[in-house]
Length: 199
Image 1 (cartoon, rainbow, N blue to C red):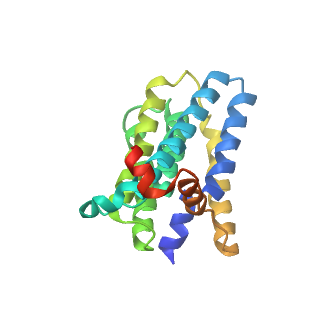
Image 2 (cartoon, rainbow, N blue to C red; image 1 turned 90 degrees about the vertical axis):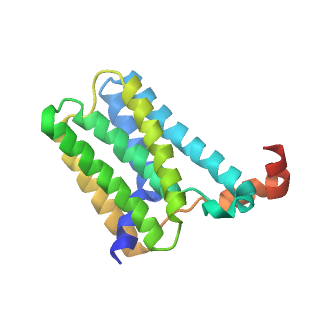
């Protein structure tokens, strides 16, 4: 039960609208360059996750010892959203507070990955790949980030919204999975064997 609740925090049904909300906040607060960098980080993570899923769905069966069929999109999306949000919100923190915030966010992202394994949605290898995709995009975002961010007093409402949205989606049993659409895309591209030969 706990794992099924935690995994919701990496669901696109939660993270897509919240990513849009952060984007709007940055634009409205006249941080257009930062908004563009945010959109690029989120978009790059989703694109890399999609490409990795297509690659592994097409060719993963050829390397069964790695136990990789489809990287965890919940973990990658969770990593890039919460990681980049932490960069925005904690940029002005100093010393131990900054390290504590970074550690807390990292542990939360890891919990999302663990929840995917616990509910049987992904293997450990798949969650690790998802984590590194998201974390790589966070590292690039942190390196390129313009000055500015989210004021810490605005962060509490965002946290409340995240938890409330996750709780309501859990109660309603609503979640989004792109696996079916990725499967259709793979068929449209010529199927797994054909795509694997192309790669």
